[in-house]
Length: 165
Image (cartoon, rainbow, N blue to C red; front, top):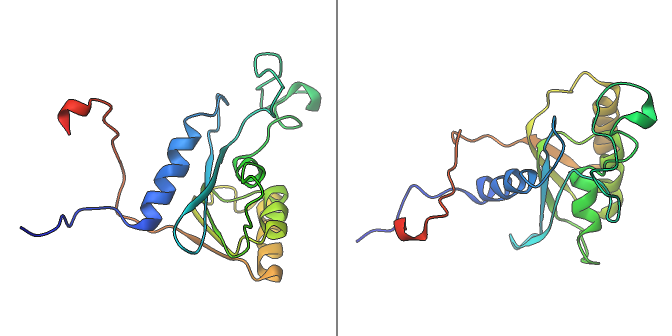
């Protein structure tokens, strides 16, 4: 008997973890996850976008438009920053981060400062915004590699019915 040949790659696995983490986000519009991996392909940390610890997400706004303090923007912690902060003191030097959405400029600063050296993403839908242009400029200056994850997988299904395994 031969080994299975339809298994997912490491990159697909880690991006899948980031996508699964995104399912924890309570943001009604944008759910993003992040998975940080070291050079030995060990997961160091995971995060998703949400309110900071101790801030009741039922008491803070989730709106995208309106007066700044009445929107989610001054309050939500992005997935990348959450993953960096959740790393429990692990050295992130040389790590990779997997995110479905290209990082904003604020998260890019944290990625650079943490020592992460490679960013994999699925979507760059905000490429023309100043925030993403700034991210790429900083990544280029800091020699942080970034590239879209190329995969033929469109869907992965999780089955919680263990009797079907």
